[in-house]
Amino acid sequence: MDVCARVISVFKCHKACPLTAASAISVAAALEGSVVNDLVSKKDDSGQVRIGHPSGVMTMYPEIKQKGNEVSVPSVAVQRTARRIMDGTVYIRK
Image (cartoon, rainbow, N blue to C red; front, side, top):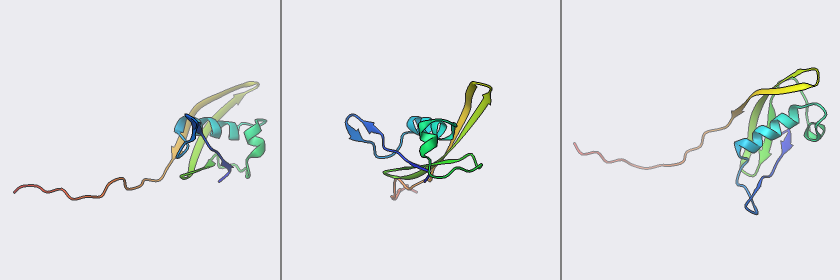
């Protein structure tokens, strides 16, 4: 992971990192001069930011465009792993 994050919601630590928070964290991590950018453990040109959270690590891809002092964020992509949420048997009549 590049940065470790915890999100507090209703006075409890969230089980993961919600996408809204992850998007903001990844943009801050990629934005030169931000506090998060200064704390990121590795900086490379891949454009990805790996956020560690209580349920694992998620990879974010913030797209940042700068023209002079103007900064825009057209998009933030996310890569997450799929996990099985159910296992069962379905019985169908013949």
